Amino acid sequence: MDDKNNIKLAVLSMILSALSFSIMQIVVKISSANIPLMEQVFARNFITLLISLTAMIKNKERIFPYKNNIIAIISRAIFGYLGVVTFFYATNNMLLADASVLQRTSPFWATLFAFIISKEKILKIQWFALIIAIIGSIFIIKPQMNSNLTTSLIALSAAIFAGIAQATIGFLKGKESNSLIIFYFSLISCFLSLIYFKSFVAPNLYDLIALILIGIFAGLGQFFLTVSCKKAPVSTVSIFNYSGVIFSYIFSIFILNEVLDAYSIFGTILTVSAAMMVYFCRK
Image 1 (tube, rainbow, N blue to C red):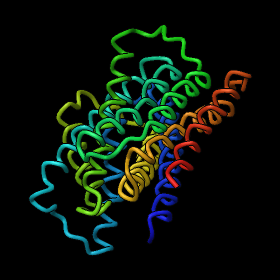
Image 2: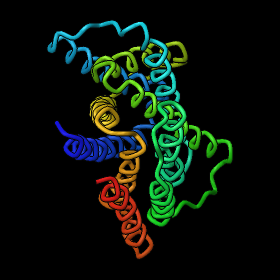
Image 3: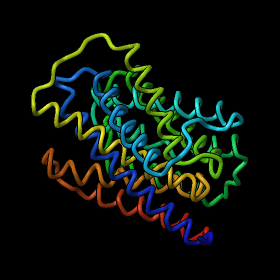
Image 4: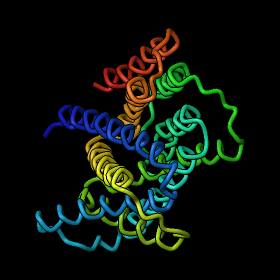
């Protein structure tokens, strides 16, 4: 597959990842009334673990990473786990709009750490597009920023952790399979979740379905994210993660009965324009 096709596949995968994670976020928010944080995190990673393990067995992939990649695999898992915990915590304990706009700064951090870790080149147009996308996301979500400061900082740290994890995936491009990377991320995350598991709430049928959906859409989001970061430079495709801002707002219209206003329309135009700017300038 040539570079242009790789970039197209990477862009599509990033958009599908954003869509999956947006669905997951809404389910996390809804189920937080009854299900504890670590139980949500465990469900999210356990189902992903089963999916990745099944894929590895089906494709007869090796179970252990190469020695030179062990540190990167573990780093990706730990930062990914921290990103999930802080993101879930922020989603459950502050305004959904605030949590979303802070977490969506992850492309900036992904681009920065991709430059640090993999020495990926960053064009001026990419920095400009990222700024436009951030402004657009603010117009769409209209964050009031009146949540507790500590919780807001936790939401911002979720974006930083996610950015480091995405940059590490880019570093592993061509070195390990997608399934193996996801498998160890899920395995280590499940183990850490059990360590900090303080209480278990037996879910009713409604909550059980919610936990399963969290795991399924998290697994899909993680799969598409890994494919995207391995098919093209992180600095090129990370901007398309902002499509999740659009998806989240669309879902909130139907699920939370929010109304699309002029600010949201303007923000959507800015966000999509920024993504297209990066895409066409890289062709």
